[in-house]
Image (cartoon, rainbow, N blue to C red; front, side, top):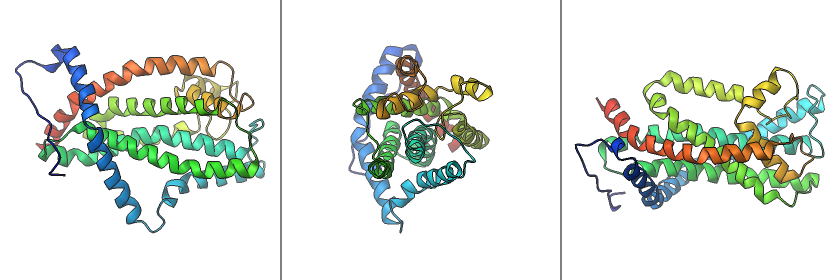
Length: 289
């Protein structure tokens, strides 16, 4: 990594916050300049991960397949009675699990990536955005691998795809962006207070059961209220509707809600990236003391 060009850092007596336009330009320029370094970091980590693992990419798809097998067995034994329309239940669960892990991976993966880079950032003048983008590269790679069993199940069950299935990529990216935003907002506290990281993991485990991942959410009762308040729900429902068609258990109005959330998410994500640029050097300094 020594042959990589180092970013030029300038110091000023004035706070960067007083110049929001300049700070925004620096943030976007930093993201663009970090893309090649991020790709190298991602290739290095992925190569090391699968070269040193006997089971290789099976570790990427294993947890999703275990979830599908477990809940498919519960459905077959009528312990669950999920009505998933024309979509076979194993396909329904695997599709939802892949998107849920894309969301949670954006949160936990960002945290782990930046935490692992703190030592490097404290010793080397290197782009901090590169580690952020590298984590997203690895998440997208893992998600692509997880889609292979989905293709197999689609062929095995003969599930027809809707003509709009490529549009499912948009709400899927919306879920990843939402997870990234949550990580960026919580990142300073998560890095400084370890208990908060454990709390986030516990909340994500609970969130799995109040999001239409394993079964369609009921239309009445307390769970329906939690699902309505859950910002992940409209993205997931919209992705299912685009991928499988209207008969996929997605309630009406999900598309419009996901669109509104997505449009609101864009400026919030930019603000989150600016916060990341401002707070990471402070966190590095605090942890180095």
